[in-house]
Amino acid sequence: DGGITQSPKYLFRKEGQNVTLSCEQNLNHDAMYWYRQDPGQGLRLIYYSQIVNDFQKGDIAEGYSVSREKKESFPLTVTSAQKNPTAFYLCASSIWAGLQETQYFGPGTRLLVL
Amino acid sequence: AQSVTQLDSQVPVFEEAPVELRCNYSSSVSVYLFWYVQYPNQGLQLLLKYLSGSTLVKGINGFEAEFNKSQTSFHLRKPSVHISDTAEYFCAVSDPGNQFYFGTGTSLTVIP
Image 1: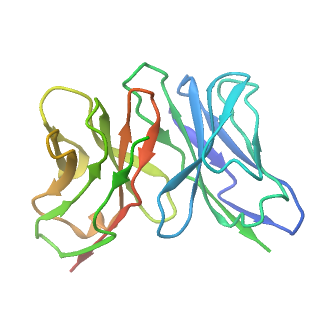
Image 2: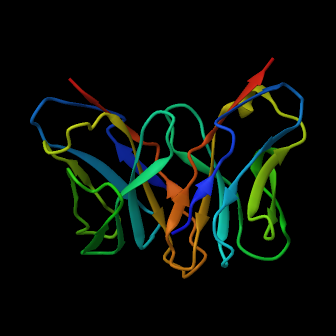
């Protein structure tokens, strides 16, 4: 059963703590993305990766970090520098097939600050 | 950069009535257009997409959308909505640079 999995579904962060959100895909997609969604707002791009061992900052990368050591995995770390981390985080992937890029999404992780 | 405008943030509609969710984008260059649906506390699910060919695109759950190049629009329609269609709907555009741009979403509420 191919797809994108995100874990955990809910995550709680204490002040000053770094937390890591997991994203795994078995679709053999080259590109992966992290978005942040706040209530009443659209999706904002945090980071994306087009290929293993390479990633690029999106529109709101400050306070976040990523790695892409394997094609199927793209974990996102929310660092203590991110002062307002409470949001719904969505991971997506796409076949890097030229102009016909469709993004497929995971179920999301909701991050809450204690 | 593209911008994607979803003109209505909230759309209430009675069950079995038709609905149209509006989407406009900023550029007239070749783009690819998508509609996604998001149910509460879930990820986004692809409803339909326009890449080329016929300007009327049919998707899942009885939805369809029409690409209008002259008006730079890609409105989503359904002739008869069901309670289960209550969700958030996002329009998205992919440009030749393969950048993906999302609208701010339209919350569709179907009233019994």
